[in-house]
Length: 107
Length: 107
Image (cartoon, rainbow over all chains, first blue to last red):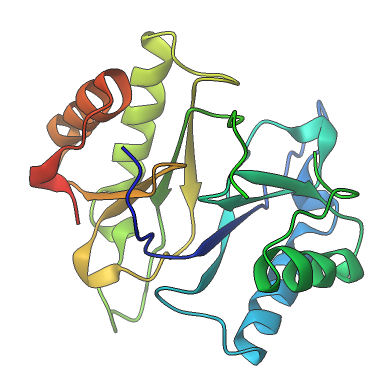
């Protein structure tokens, strides 16, 4: 059932959920907004944004809160966590540009 | 580079972006919030929510505004538009439960 040619080669979703009650950790309180903005700008700088290429999106809670902050890249279905924009740059350089999994950040 | 076993068998992202300036159509003004809530409740009723099964998420603008409202299902990478909750039910029944593409709603 997979489409042969995806609309985006890499469709990246950052959880930016903010959980005010603190019942579980939430990505939106762990740098997700900055990380998403950084990724979006970096992809644009590299000229990689657009159909057939890369799209960076925000998303609601993806229910992997305890492993977060989380980002998932489709259609590969690879999930990563990150600490800072250095980690985001590594995901962009290696996963998106070179097509390899960043094992140290994979969840 | 595809993972063999996806964390979610069907990871569904509804664009819920609201564009106040009206420069382009926006899914959030075309029933996306109701559609996403409906899908989330329906999947829960069916007992299909959770790891290994289905996740229903909101997402920001996925840049297919003129074809919207849009929803994308990964890892298949199938994009749909919809008019109402009847269309959403058809996507759930046929794509998610029976594994077939709903050609009349596919974009």
